[in-house]
Image (cartoon, rainbow, N blue to C red; front, top):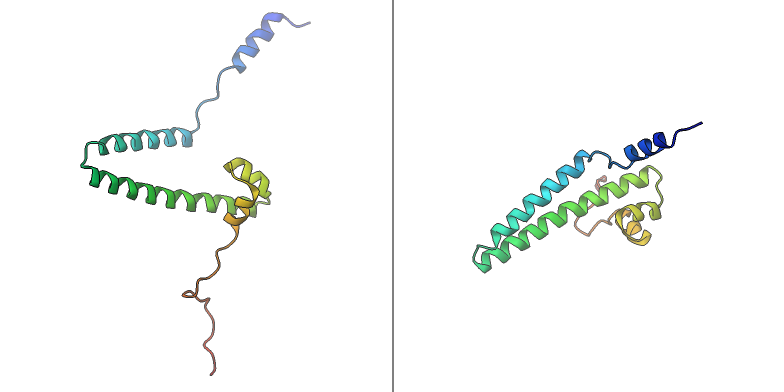
Length: 118
């Protein structure tokens, strides 16, 4: 026979949130650092401030987009469905399909091949 107090004690222990993950702590620290940077930019002349924000926007977006593309591609290699990846990334399966499709060669890039005998 179980004691009602034991059940309440066990339930109380389960209500505590799990310890934060290391990556989540690092992401929060990065967010805090970016907040500080953006706050510091408010004291710059407007032209310099706008230039700095455009630079920050382009560099962080390019980096994060490449990182997300690589993670989605890795998930596909592990047999994850497009919908499953999309659910985790907050995107549609069609967006994931486009994201994980290799980019076609532009006219300036050519695969390595033997020179033509002509």
